[in-house]
Length: 269
Image (cartoon, rainbow, N blue to C red; front, side, top):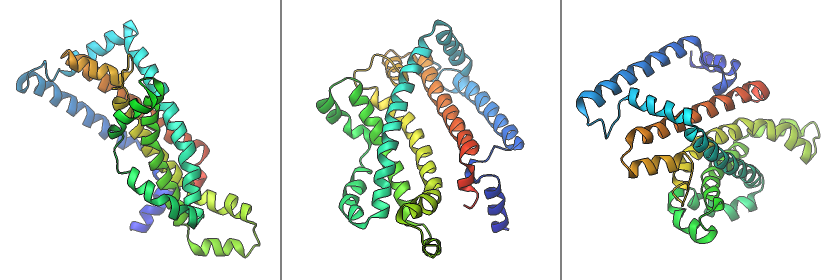
């Protein structure tokens, strides 16, 4: 039964398949129930100034949409996230490939990778300011740092877990090193790379809040912290709501892109 279920998932494109209709219905009911509970809790159980009702939060959010302020913060944060995520991915994939393919590279770099990936990005806040100042470079650095190790480790693990029999079978056809990499290694590890990118993208959205603690004048992280300073909890929750919705939209778009352009890599997983 488990094997049949696994084959069914693989046939739909692995973990990247479209969400079934019934899941959408139950998910919608869950969200509605949560909003109702939020409304009751913020009205009767908690001081609304500390935990604003959803209707007030949505009203404030809509006002910020109309005056354009929330859209400005969204644009600033998305640029930072996109740049940091792109740089982290571009660096993480080839380094992960090198560590997975070449044992000397693995031996040389693994101690640093294993050490650094357990140091949270927020710990680098002050060093980033000292090294790069309070401009965009320090903010981008924190998002790159958040991205790179997730992509790197997933890529490396993908290379190291390719079945040996698959490599031996390919060698019997007399493939060159480049052909082996292009036709066997790369297709086999693409699911791992995409998974690492997806997780890293989610962490990049989380890291932007910490990054925008560095003398930021705009961005959703700045909006959240600035609103908290002035006890404007409705604005703070509006920023959090926007950040979460953007994250969901980015994840859905990423999954849709994988289903559209790279689903073949998941058919055998």
